[in-house]
Length: 153
Image (cartoon, rainbow, N blue to C red):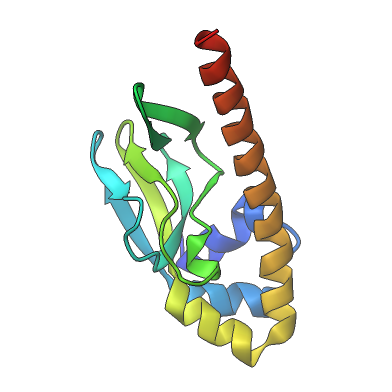
């Protein structure tokens, strides 16, 4: 039987993370599933968790004037959804929609922030890992914007 601790430990995002931290993370984790077409999070809403995608695909979307909904990036198995739980004011910066049936592990942001305040080494380790996610998402958004503006010329 798969335990949340084992699932968290085997997720690529947490590769090489110390066992003591895996145990702390698993204490904030739960299984979730989203049907295709369902919005998982919406821009402006409170960001209270993040997700380890185990199965399925999730479209990260923004609204663009005169263009409607734009998919910035599509995430899949092994990806992370959500970093806004980490940075005040803890609100989502975009929408995320399950493209098809998606299974994930949800990690409670409030629980994790508390654990990071109690253990700054854990907090620093998570911040380093999330910084890479943020950089990749910003780059994907940049390329999407370049495509949008190139199409208007």
